[in-house]
Image (cartoon, rainbow, N blue to C red):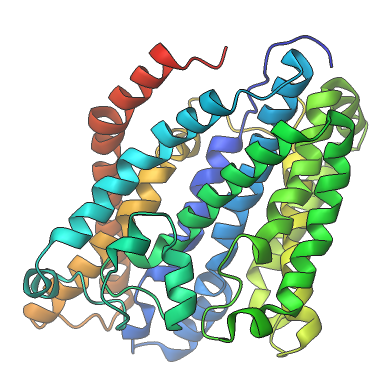
Length: 382
């Protein structure tokens, strides 16, 4: 590995925003639009459909970055400082997570109902034993539904992220560096195995692929790239730089084409597609990260780019967006506002997006950043 300083990967913050935005579009209530049926069908099938791919992209980004960080530390020091790694992750994830979870648990049900916190299509009452222990995803699997209180219904992915951190730090702590790529390759096949037998294991088809192990290939495939970048960044960078820029642009356009035609590509309910879609998406997004690896790549989002700036607050965007969507839906119902034109739908989307961004900025600077400064003061990763 050349040098001991960790690399800052340009454009990755912008990717976080795009991942969030796909989830955001998916959660918008486009079903309420009745005018212009043909355009509604187009938007639903090609823009709104497949919001879960945004979460998949988040997983791929995490798999790359966490594997890179742990491999870098293993190479630099010969060991993994479990305490420092865990505390640094906890300082980033736990404060906002527990703030929202405790709010959801303490808010009286009648008030939650009146302000729109129970508008996600039913579900079960929050269970503090699962909500507070990052096991909400397993409660959802057990119940065959999600929690009915906003925004706990999207916290299943945060639970998977937390489980991923714990598994990765323990594995990297105990195994030798040379065995890391073998572990990552094994994880890909183990994820496929778990998806094949998930029905037998969980005995429900309502919540599919809702645990770490059935999503493991997202983390491990991108983790392989993270490992090789940590061990020889320059070699990977030179390899990408030698690829004709036009080909790299074409690859990006192919990804956009895939996202546009998701519903058409996976219209058939075939077991093969269900089992291997995750693996294909993981490879696809890992390839996208690879394209942007070189520091001097002409393909990049600068640090001042609006998407990069928004990506830095993507955690808050993900946590808060569903609250605003459900609250505004409730307000519309209370005042008999029918969202049946595209002008009203676009207005709905802009209001919720702007409100989400505004609250996320306040949350980041007034709540999250002070905690992160404490983290840097006591648990610096330098």
